[in-house]
Length: 598
Figure 1 (tube, rainbow, N blue to C red):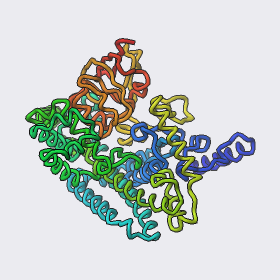
Figure 2: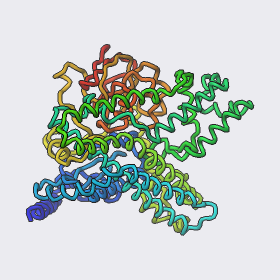
Figure 3: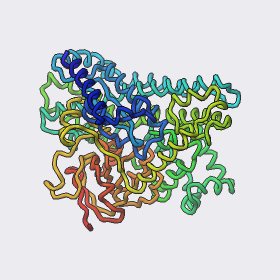
């Protein structure tokens, strides 16, 4: 009853503020993401804090990407999975879009009695994943692959207007289902990670930022790593065939035409084409629909092969990560044994089960990127471009990719009779706004507000509106843990959290987009907003990695651990305060960054 009274009081306040002329948002229109656009005056009194998701919003998202994939799709998945598992302290997240970015508020349960009731259901729902995580993931992977193949059967050349409408609906349903599957594996394995960390803190005084903890949970293979290895094999094959000079002399865009000029080059291209037939349905940007797939832009995987050749990795007899993984496997088994040896015999079996499920987290984090995000975004891009071409040919929009400037309701409103509709008044304005956001991001770095809150400051917001959710995805990826000390306290210039411990010193290279990774030289320290699988090649070159955003289960931290590279995440300001060419020192165990030549 008190919660209902609170809502009634809130409604009265909104109404009174509207009468007094204080509530400008009372006349606001939900534009890009109907029902999901952030209106601070209305949203904050109810949920208090909305945290910016810099992990998934860099560069700024397109209107369709923000509306369908994140505000609608991801929000649905997060509410779905927390309902599925009955996460004791959180009912899911509420997504809101603003300035091409997704912001999250956490729907927290604070009643201890309800939390205890949900704990019983949570343990029951988690048990099948403890017993057979791999089996559940294999089944879900197959469902995703079957769904993608069904969508790819659509033939734009013979489609009617009704077919295009049904395709739009099918794409929406696919996105929603993909997010459900996406979070089943993530919430289960990440919950085990965060529960294991809780146990280790209470029993041994260690958290997931120390080597003893991290060593237990790294060194596993997955499909993303296999693709990276296949690219290395293609690079090594090119070197063995005497084609290295072409990769060194030509740009990534020029290599395929150059290969077509010789028999041996054509022979290598046959191998590359076979690789692309299997691996080409992969989005370059797994978080948005606007960038091309590998099939559309084969120079993207070619560039990765070129980097293996130029760095000398292709000339080695063994793939670097294979060798590293052997070392990590030995460390892992030793770390697990040492941890279990500290426990009473009666508790070892249950603790080992928790470790086993937590060990799935890093591998799943990478592999789901491929099967969920990269493949889903690639198929959606293909499908929506088919719809966009249909709308363009009927004069409804200026160009096929203007479909990404629309939201799903706008697409539905015109797709049946596009020659009697005109969406250019929307798409031209949205494109100008979106391109302006991208341009500003490329010039200034992250400019968007990191937090909308009515709390006193960010630490109070985190303490009241994030930490009590005990949601592992929020705490370990999207928002991430906050540094426990200030830069001033440890004499550093910038402070973050440890993704992988270690110390390194070198020249900083600030890179905002994976397309610019060619600027990175061996021994540089990569400074970036955050990384995704398109950035992985950088970890074989860099001396250390520093990210503005991300938690200990972000891609940046996971890959840093796999390469044993000093890695710091959640600095918030590294890209702003560090300039390319400056010499910096990274002490990742402390989360400390020192700018040596200011």
